[in-house]
Image (cartoon, rainbow, N blue to C red; front, side, top):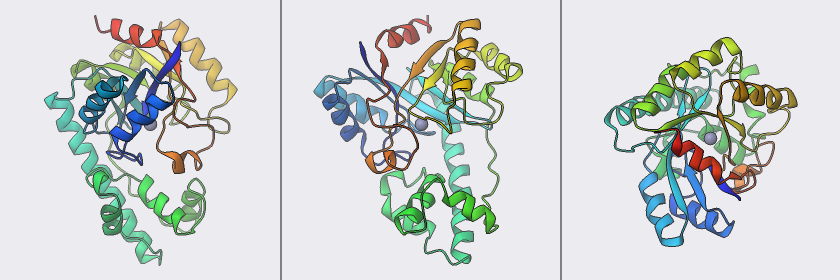
Length: 279
Ligand SMILES: [Zn+2]
């Protein structure tokens, strides 16, 4: 049965709803297994699990770790793992400092936006503000579509500060250390993630799966990517996963493809396979 969504976000990263609301919505959409995979945060997992017990949705504790060349999803992680939490905290701080700097530049260039305003408007994401927020607010204030604003800003010379990120290999190892199952997220985004030379390193580090579908469509995810992912998964015996990468309804409308919750489900057997890989 295709009743499993392995990629979702709550307001503990850049999603727009609470873990409770997310789980309730999942229930309405007939989802039986749901992974909460907030960016660099596991803060919402407990709430999701509690609500899941109430309404009858199995919650897979998850995370989406930002790395230098892409992102790594971690499933069945121990959310109390010390090293994981320590590194996630450092990462959140680094990203947030970068956003702060970016907002300052935007303000100086005359844009009606401030970092303080973001923190006030999104109190639950307060310590996990990523680049999504300034884009979202700029969009709300009439500066254009979320995906087009970055190009416009670049032309105006308003640049984001380079943020120091861990490598994909390190992110994979971190998930493993926290007892979890590492899966490469949307590998069509990012630099050279699907190049076999790089890919081999991920497999060696303990990669278990690869996301085939997160709702992205062309121009982001092209037919050639799908072909390559299938080929690599076969060659390295990796589990193919999918999910919606749901961030909330307003965001669904901003992203190309279909990121509606439950629209890119995978078979429940995938959950078993991921779990089995831990043994
Ligand atoms: Zn995501």
